[in-house]
Each structure stands twice: as structure tokens, then as C-alpha cells.
Image (cartoon, rainbow, N blue to C red):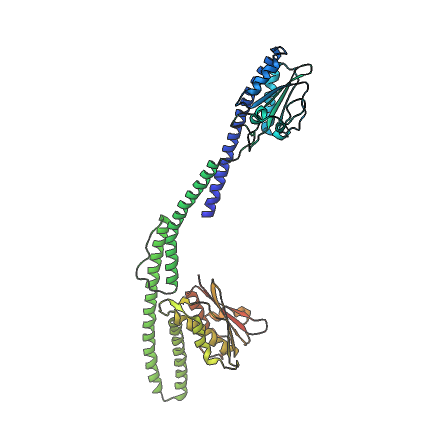
Length: 466
């Protein structure tokens, strides 16, 4: 949200700044043209004045103009137009040249020869001899036509007054158009954009943090509930109206699930009590039968019924372990599970590679039962078990490889179902993998199966750390 907000702010500020800058430059161009016209009117008046002066008075007037202080122009009379290296055309230079030329032709006549050019101070030539600024006394022209360190371009206007007589006027444009350059965004505007973006991001960041705190509490409560932790108090409802509604729905759901789990536990406790009593009574009655074949049949049916009841109760008991969540040392759990099967010379039935980097927050007995079921299953059907631990910042992964025949592809998911066994000759209730997966799911993880290319089955337990 902060990045999208920053992008939107920058786009809006850029667009508004471009519009403002375009209007500013248009206004500046209008002011520049107006100043150029005003300067052209002064030049035309000077040209008309020099035309009206007798030849003997013209040098005196030039000396007076040259001695004037605070001026930004130099005037001289030459017998020919001076050639100089001119600056290339730009939008502002072209606009000024067109404005000055138009006014001069309007005031002095369209037949008058006029030359208006922009020249850099280094290439400026003033008198017939082609002297540069550095070759002249600083009091003559240097202070008038240079603005160190900027040294803007000089506008050179040459007007033909008569045969062999050219009026030469070198001048600088008035402020703020001296440099004729299009300025970018002023520093004040950039500071305004930066401060506006910073304050906007700060307030939006506080708003996002305020809105996300209830969501973090909701995520933490959901994780604790998924791990079976006892939550005495409902989650605090806060934040925006939508977040409050979600929190309220979560509290209602948590209450219903808690009530359902309690009722289920009571139900199975009652079933356990109610079923074992008649089964025991039936066994006593069977023992009183005098017909041994019939007694054997009844005993076999009762054994099967008791096996089914124990399997169902064990499934519920093993997947509904009521423990507090605490940091679990998975390395210690694995060491306890594999120690009976390992030998000092490495010839044991279980091998272990890798280790957990840090404790995992979960239910200790449930995790031990989950990993123990996976190892027992590998030893039962694959003779040997090879364990590989991969622990990263995001998840803890335990691979359990066996050396058995594997599982057909169409039955990879079916083996997780209660009481399912690939062969009727196999011992047990067929609950180990299902219980392991249920415990993994209660921790937000997963148990998956994959046949190895060289034979055997790989069972992978993944538990998220975030």
C-alpha cells in the first residue's frame, strides 16, 4: 500500500508540476517577448537619434554613453557589420530575435538592413578591428556585458544608418531573462513535493499499521486455535468496521468449534464406556458356551469388534492431543526416536542427516507421535529408514525414505484414510499415516508421499515456521 501510494503521489506531483512548469514557461516567454520589444523600441529610438545627429557630434555622444555606469549595453559606430560566431537557435532566442527584428522594421522601415544575433561573451567582437572584450579596458565594455560566473549570451544588433555607417548595439536582456535558459522546477517546488510525499506516506503508514494490528491479532489467534491452544478470552475487536466484522465472525466461529470439540470428546468418552461394557459382558457369556466351534466364532467376532472400537478411539485420541504450545527441540525428539535403531558402526536400521536450526513452536508429544509414526511405518514396510532434515527460515522439512516396494500411484492418497491397508496381512489399525497427517495439519503443515526412482517410498513432513 505504501509503494502504491508513493507511486500515485509521485505521478500526481509530476503531472501537476509539468502543468505548472509549462504555464510558468509560457508566462516567462510572454514576459521575455515583452521585454525584448521594449528593448527594441529603445534601439529604434537610439538609431533615429544617431541619424539626426551631425557627424561631428556622434563621437561625443558615443563617449558619453560609454562612460555611463550601471548600463548593460555597448554602442559603437562601425563602417561595416562585424562577423562573429553566433549561438545556435533555441525557442527563446528565436522568439527574442523575431520580436526585436519586427519592432525595428516597424519603426525604422522595412528597407533598412538589420542584423540581430546572439553571441557568447568569448566570441563577441566590438569595433571594426574585431577586438574582443578581454582586449578592451574593463571600464569600457567588460562590466556592461559580463555577469560572472554566469556570463549570459549577448544580443548584438547591427543597423545600417547609411553608406559605410553601421550602428552597433551589444546588450544583455533584463532580469530575470538574462540567461535565456528554460529553468527547471525551483528548489522550493521540489521541497514542497518531497515534504508533501513524506507527510502523506507517514500518515498512510500509521493508518496501515493501525488497520493491520487487528489483522495480526486475528492471524495469531487463528494459528493458536489451529494448534489447539486454549483461548479463554475472545479476540479484541478493533480497527475499521470491516475488520471488526471479521473479528466478530472469528470469535463466533472459535466458540462454535470449541463447543463442537468439547461435545465430540464427551461423545467418544461415552461411546468408549458404553461399548466396552457390553463387549465385556458378551465375552463372559461366550466363555460359558459349551460348543467350542461356536465359542471360537463368537470370540473372533468380538475380537474384531473390539479392534474396530479401539482403532476408532485411538484415532480420535491421537489426533486430539490437548497440549500447550511451546518451543520444541526437534533434534532431541529425533534423537530419542532413532536411538533404539542406530548402531555405532553405522549398520543400524535408521540413519539421520541434517539438523534443525532452532526450536519449533508446537505440541511436543503430538510432534513426537507424528514423527514416530512416520519412522515406524518406514521400518515396518521398508526394513530401513533414512532420515534427512532440511531447515530454512520458512519451514522445517523431514524426509523419511524406506527401502520397501513403495505405494501404487493411485493409492498414494488413499493410504491416509483410517483403517486402510495395502494388504490384509499387514498388522496394525491402518491409522499411522492418517494420524501423522492430522497432527501436521493442526500445525499448519503437510505430510506427502512420493515413490523414489530407485525404489522405496519417501514420506515428507513439512512444518511452516512463519
